[in-house]
Image 1 (cartoon, one colour):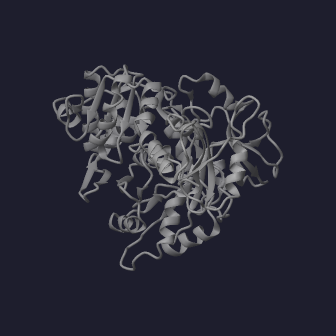
Image 2 (cartoon, helix red, strand yellow):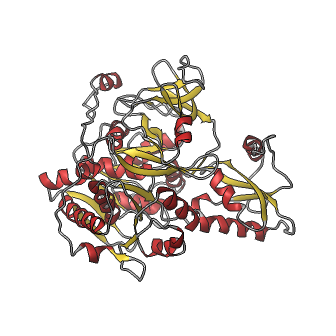
Image 3 (cartoon, rainbow, N blue to C red):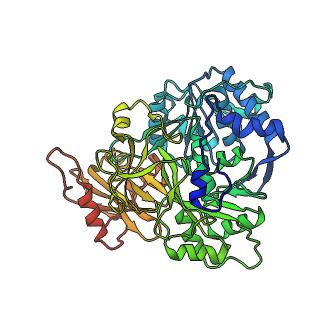
Length: 548
């Protein structure tokens, strides 16, 4: 999307959107290249056992076509929802591409989700099919009776009585498939995002969402792509950062994606992967960067040939930026967005000096403003709500089956991100804080409502208030203040039990790392928890640990 330019002003002046009336993500990121350069490498897949596989665009087209035929054979129709519950793998990409070419709507799901988190998302979306593996199928087995619309579960690693062997069945079907003629505004992807109250909301995106991402992705990787580029991220493809900031934009450009998500992220493994696979571009969340920096300098024998590193989720400090320059020889570019409207702000070291602590300027094509509660832009230098003008190609269509929440997301002509910031006269945007209760921990955005609902499902819990407590490594950790039910006593053992209760039902990154047992919670007159008081309390506390 971006033209070559020597300055940010030139980049913006030369930009124009190219969003055709008819557009399909699956065709764009797969068939386009398979038909013109079939032997180009789309994916390099590294398994947990170290096994390595190169997947060409021709391979990806054939596999996705067979899967699309399988979906169609089994009753998946245009507009039906297909969930993908897998780690980074060729089947993850192929399942998304297959469903999108069919005209279905995909739902990326995180492998670490527990049964309760999966049941809500699959039930709320009315998913008809899930593509997963043995571990995912085991979780689904316990909730399938509660999901009447879920008719098919496909496994990529065999089958059992309640699942279908994806590869075995797909292999019996043709490698040719005629994609649906979708419009750019047709629904394509639902990504569930954490809210401040109640259950997560499904942000419904159109096929145009990928085109809307391109300016921000290209800007954050210093006018990506360039000859020799090869990209990797440790971020799971179940999140918008992995799926739409890395996998799909790279395939759109024909850039090879290294697929490798470690069972446990370590700095040594990351450095070695970058060296061994010739990774030139990476999206590294701030927590990953901090862990790599804390581990010390990488071994001298590694060949680190990075061209760009992009990072988002929280503002980087000058120390991390300087470390990136010293170790990788590049200036880390920061970017900003959220699930509903992503990749709208970025820095770009190729065009302008980094300003640590300031996240960047609006990516070309995105009209980003700081507005008041009524959607009226405020003067430069004034704090307000970071917002984006309606009609942006990257903007979501709305929350799935939730008109009220969708309407509340807008004020006047702007979508409100819910994040407070300040814009200067040159258009640089500084993040100040959130005006909601979403917790940012290790790059994940976590809604307290879902955790509170889970905790009160335990017999020992009468009430729970969940907030983010400042943490030097993770930005914030999840902390829960718990009022016990009658007949239960506070103890370290009970705190650990509650942590495991949340971890097994929601996700490993959502469990409260600290639990404080309290006699009461601060409440409004209408019975709402006053989380800002809990946040103030937590900010004044030292690190205490479970059962504090």
